[in-house]
Image (cartoon, rainbow, N blue to C red; front, side, top):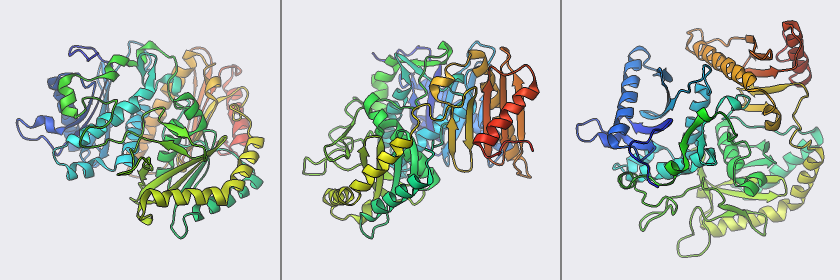
Length: 511
């Protein structure tokens, strides 16, 4: 099942450190991760050498911001500087279609998500390299983590990248549940009880209903990371299906296939030695336990309502599972993660590790305190939210297929996926192209010395006569597909106005 050295791949993903491997004979030191791992090192170094050259060259003209993307005839090179001098680069083959099947910004957000989740669980890559300059442990952590992450993109035996079929989704945002005033008061009361259960220790919480965020006391970046992980692995939907509820996996164009399952399973023996993983299914060896938080089907609900997992191993000298821990980006604190679930309600409580000197015994005491103090409020909140819940199609608007993004709050709302699948390929390709143009215009505006936000409106008539529309104003974005609209632009514009007035408080109205 090892990857043949001459296998043809449609995607390559690498992480490298510009501060390493700068002397002849030490070039391999700079490679921290490469997919597919079975490629010969000469090919891996060729890809990384080209990327390094492009970064160095573009820095001559833009020292503060090197290249984001390089478009070649057959490939797109997408760059993301995750940490100073540590780069993640994706090289994606272009399809033979006349229209691009994916957006550069969507691919870069995949790279950003990989790094953000990795740092949440393991800390920064640079800090790991400073602790262990050889880099072997860092490579092993990155390899097991990213391979677990990529498995969520498997559809059958194919690995799919976010494509034009996902153009009405926004990675790196949270989806909020809309609740009334009475329910909001009940949620606030529950949060106060949750966060006071650890005594005088300041702690944080997230509350989710289904796969939607209800409440958070974390910073925006930490909220996105914990929300993303919850939807991937912790919510009732994730526990029952073993997959992410807003995963990008959907049957799409075969051109978006980027790897086969065999390429995911086992790297070649040479790469196994280099990445320090002879058996990535075990995640541990005789010397060190590698925590693999993205392994699927590893969480389950205990009798007391808390979710349990053996991913973090066991407390030394006991058979007690070690409590999960995460690093907060905003404060740099290491936190215990306690997850309680009642029906569709998921509560995530984060407690500073430094505040609990007696380890698992102290965490168990806090968990018990939460159950004693908040159980009735949990029942009440879940019941109230369930009564007001409109189901999976709660945010469907008849006649519209839309995406709303609030960039200032990192919040998005979109038509349900089942409704988006009713759109034709022509409409989705047109929207994908429109979003690419809008993102290009936004990046130009950022580079503008005046640094002023630009209002933007674009309307396109697609090949199938559908209207594809974008409006951007004051940090908020609206994308819309109208397949059954009238022939006139005036009709389409009026439809957008009605949507804006009714669902967006007139934010996108032209008046």
